[in-house]
Image 1: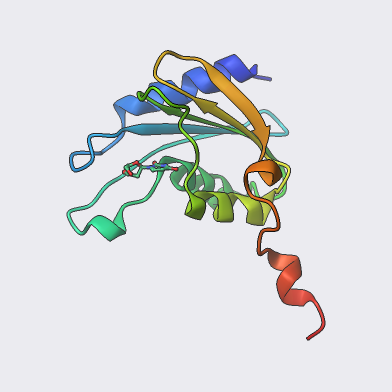
Image 2 (image 1 turned 45 degrees about the vertical axis):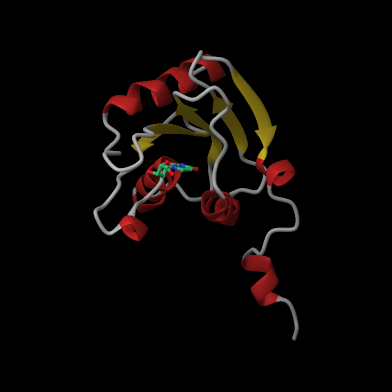
Length: 135
Ligand code: THU
């Protein structure tokens, strides 16, 4: 099982794969599953800017499409900035669908990182349970 530090380092490795010619803001991500499987991702931008996908959602769709839906434990997110690389709102929403308890490891350019459970960054999210409540 990877340590948090090792998972963060994998997210940093993914900065090399980022396609970010418009923002010049590469982001890398790595998701760890309960069985130790890891899915990585990077941001992939597009000339039609709105078609860009974030690093976290790239990693998430890789995990889910490979059958890892219910066992996502941690995600590391790395950027080169001075501030920790926090997940955007859309990524928080997408991640919360599969595990509101997911551990977020947000790293900054100097390699330092902080750890929060997703529900602290994304309280009272709209989730699958919201839709199945009685109306
Ligand atoms: N980006 C991510 O990859 N993850 C986030 O959570 C926030 C933003 C990317 C999208 C875009 O390619 C660049 O960072 C600047 O917004």
